[in-house]
Length: 227
Ligand SMILES: C[S@@+](CC[C@H](N)C(=O)[O-])C[C@H]1O[C@@H](n2cnc3c(N)ncnc32)[C@H](O)[C@@H]1O
Image 1 (spheres, rainbow, N blue to C red):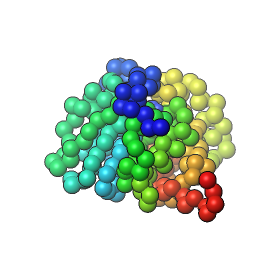
Image 2 (cartoon, rainbow, N blue to C red):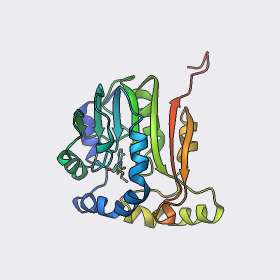
Image 3 (cartoon, rainbow, N blue to C red):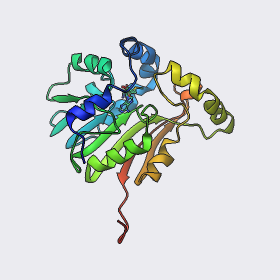
Image 4 (cartoon, protein in one colour):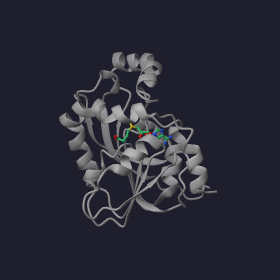
């Protein structure tokens, strides 16, 4: 059964976050934004259409890139401190976002609600990526699209092993972020057909948070006879 807004907000209260980490988030990303993230965000967000849900909207770094005239824009953010900063951002003209506090694992929306779900740098942090992927699938309308930008575990053996070793210390300094998630295979295993549209190893981010991948995922058709 779909969670109520109240149940989702109570679950959101359990997601780690602090006023300090919310305040330092944008300064921490400043160089990465200037050197590429902003361009990647613009490109990704310009592809949304119809009724849109952004998962883990954070302090609102994607907000400026939304096109006017969307049917609906819901920004989901569990952390109360980041949600407050998000609410203070001025959206572009013609964009009227609704902010909802909820974790990705428990989205308080009916099945088949959104044409687009989009997220940037969130599947690295959610407590349960598979459950979140299942929720994204559930709330997407048939034919809907999931757009993502993520840092993922490197295929380079040395860097990949380093990311595995640094997972726990990195998690402590980076607000619960896992630097070694295999997000694209996880999405494929969760019933999405995934097209990686861009991959970049050169962002001025710490090597543990590279490469960055961006792509489009669509719910894979369910085989006839499958329940
Ligand atoms: C690295 S920040 C990214 C913020 C924003 N999407 C961006 O690109 O700047 C990770 C975000 O995921 C949110 N988050 C953490 N756990 C979550 C969960 N279980 N469900 C949804 N969002 C979550 C955090 O509160 C934070 O806003």
